[in-house]
Image (cartoon, rainbow, N blue to C red; front, side, top):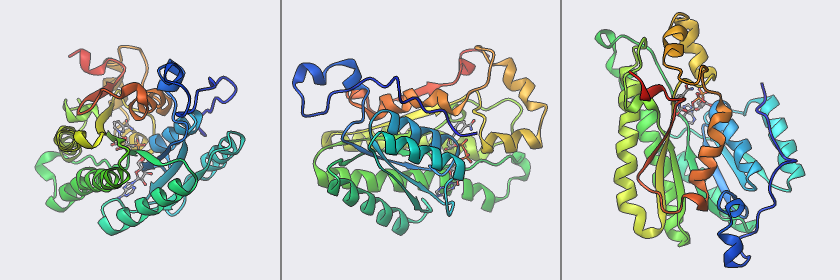
Length: 292
Ligand SMILES: NC(=O)c1ccc[n+]([C@@H]2O[C@H](COP(=O)([O-])OP(=O)(O)OC[C@H]3O[C@@H](n4cnc5c(N)ncnc54)[C@H](O)[C@@H]3O)[C@@H](O)[C@H]2O)c1
């Protein structure tokens, strides 16, 4: 189903060139006007929903994904929204585990962003993979594949974006999509490599935030939880349908998550509203981690 887009109710936010009192107003603090935001894993699922969020917040968006093309219906809907908002979207096939590909695609995105007068200012590293294998049977190659995409891929994405932000001398915001699984072991799932990879993303965030803060680059993790209904979790549920009952037992709000639940948190981390926040984790899990 295509993500829902809300355009009629968008506040008219001031542009960054307006006076200081306007630039401190809440609509401005939560806006992405005059910015280009890149999203890895933006071909479908959570990444695609976050692309809608960026457009709704007034930013231009560039999606990168290993898929040859984005999810057709959603992309058409995103294009329509961008057109009426006078914003641009672009799609770039890219394997985030390849440093050459990631470098080339992000350089292209940054150049195009500069040309259109909306500098590349933020990135969401959302590309990720999941796998369920009992730890006693986990094959080393499979384990390393999960780490390569979720950890090395997120690092290469962040590293190249940060290099561009340093060269542009305007700072930037990097949002690494981690997971509540980086902090807890999910009951009913055997996902050691995935959980370990997301823990590594949390620590990577703190490490690079510590190195890049003096360049005005903020790095934070957004940790979804309570299971978002996407292709990734649908595959887990198909293999193990009874797990949904276990998940619902920890659902303090009585429901699982949807990709839309992460739109406002992601925009907050990308926008000026979070300008004093770096090296932090924003966990959005429907209360799942709050109860044992
Ligand atoms: N769905 C959940 O419940 C949940 C919970 C916590 C965290 N997350 C995280 O959210 C992110 C998005 O997950 P999703 O649920 O939308 O899953 P998804 O499988 O629908 O989307 C992941 C996207 O990443 C892309 N991708 C995979 N490997 C890639 C690579 N090497 N290079 C570039 N792109 C690649 C896929 O093609 C896909 O479009 C992941 O990082 C995931 O770990 C999801």
